[in-house]
Image (cartoon, rainbow, N blue to C red; front, side, top):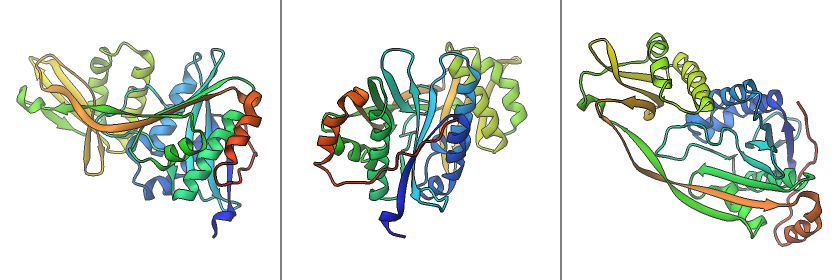
Length: 298
């Protein structure tokens, strides 16, 4: 296969985006994507978003791959929120609770060519809108090749870094701790743990994602009881050899937040088709990358 055999397409709607996420499982595995950028997590977010009547962003996926093979070489899973005058595009699940301490999001690209095509496809999607738009991506690793490609194509893009926050598990210092990956233990403790969450969307995501990943053996439940009363609880995602404290509360200490690894994000805005001639002029300053305009709907 040569790079010229690759095409870029955009699909819209939960069912078609979920299908592309599942098709990209080999790519996510090859790139060692974290659990929060893998198919089970992303399809759970899609289901949780769809279950709420308002606001309900439109899922979108930009896909890079050889034509006619079904192989995925690049994938950006976005959601488009258009409640106001500006359409805002973010990574799927933006703002929902994820384990901190390290980059949790990914723009999957097999190589630099796929990253360039993915960036071009994202911009093609947005500049084709009939309304002003804003692209706001966050939670990505430093040096992300798609972020670099976006910045090359749009010199007005703002690339910024931020420090993540890591939840540290020191519950063993707070009292006798029970730790288990039994899904039944998760169901017993979830109501108490979720009661502390003020955001209904966050509670919905934690409940659904925790139950699914518990069945997969990827959730550890740590509890501290005193006289039959839950005094502390913590959900930890287990991603291979990594343990990622995720969601918890404590009345007896043992949980603290510290600064974690840096994250990178990018923000860029435009006015849709109104400014398309200007953007096309800027695009001539960078190497040409063919992008298909085929779109699905769902």
